[in-house]
Image (cartoon, rainbow, N blue to C red; front, side):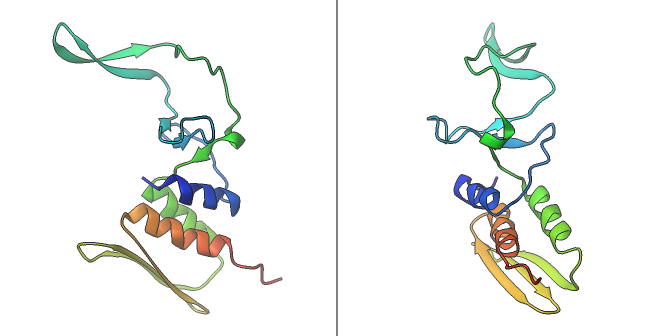
Length: 143
């Protein structure tokens, strides 16, 4: 999963979150930065019942926070979501190649466009894609 600092940068750079079921997010600056939340249709918990692991289902969460605006949250996109956002952002460009490789230690994301080539490295694939996406979000508008 993408790191929270990089997710913050992507949000600030203008990455739009089309919130949907199974998306991961963080609630920043409320003492929960290290917690990861997920949007679900029905809440399920892992519990122990009579010594056995079980999944229990609850119709509503017993939590003091009734709701929060998605604008206040930080989306933690998955590797797939980052790759899709990168392809969407580059749709109007001539993309010669987009490669993600792993050398046994570091992930390398390389994009070769007709007018530009970039390369980013990270310890996880999602962050490599995230850094690449951030680069293209931060580019000045050619107009």
